[in-house]
Image (cartoon, rainbow, N blue to C red; front, side):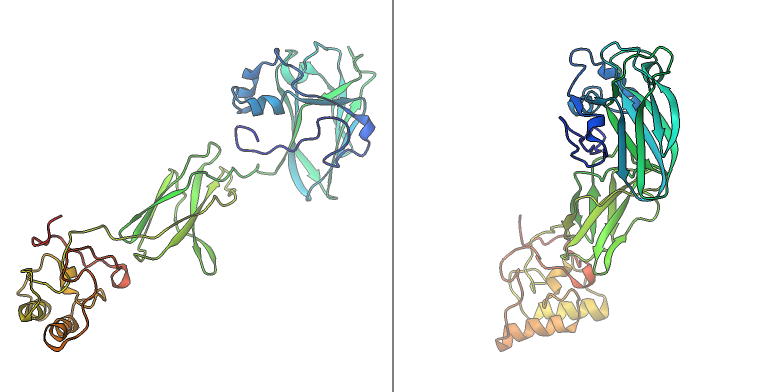
Length: 359
């Protein structure tokens, strides 16, 4: 894998045809790994958008396969492609000349170090062929002898790497490091930047498949999904998007359950609060609900049945417990604590303050 996150398939080292793409294994049976050791000019990688300090990049573009009649047949879907060939000349062989044929047509009648790196040794160069059509499911590339090329004489044909890109380019790699932080009815997402991405799309898993939750392309490495239900887990993946609109594969998913922020400790049903649950608490609930003449600072304390709503059933629940032996109220009850359950519809009744419960 190179420094841009792209995986390159290895045709070697050694003889044989591990990718099964060379119809004549004897045509290019030889490989040399790191053949420019000590002389390879890694700064030439920067011109290709790669990392001059990356050992992986140096290995990919400083390992050669060579022979005298080098042909490849690569199975590939029909379409239009850009074919990029990469070379490094390491032996000082300015007399190495050969032809390049693609799909039966000679696209470069005289390829040499003069063409791919201006005659400079030890530097990675590229020969690009941007419009190559495949119509029978096979991309055919030939690196062929050129006995009549001026200045020729070295018949060993070399190549470092071959890149085949679909029309419009490859999609960028998926983002790494997707993380989510829960909020009140929301999830805050972050991820690592992808150098080749123009922006990102955010997908949330739903029963019928992933759903894109952003409208416009996200051009930063963060996104907040809102309007969620507290206590319910949501799973997200991020896709990088290229300048041509190509999406990457899904990132690894991150699953997060939004939570209402922890409020002050309180005692459910003790509306006053005075340390006791009695008739005055039930009356205060009814006065708040129907007359608007009581202003509580902790609505969670009024929610006696913990259903996320405040109504006459809360007053009844208090009276049943206090005078008729009804069931205890949901926690936190009698002792100070937090409301650990989500309220109805993901809405938080809230508890701004509750003086009788100290932190």
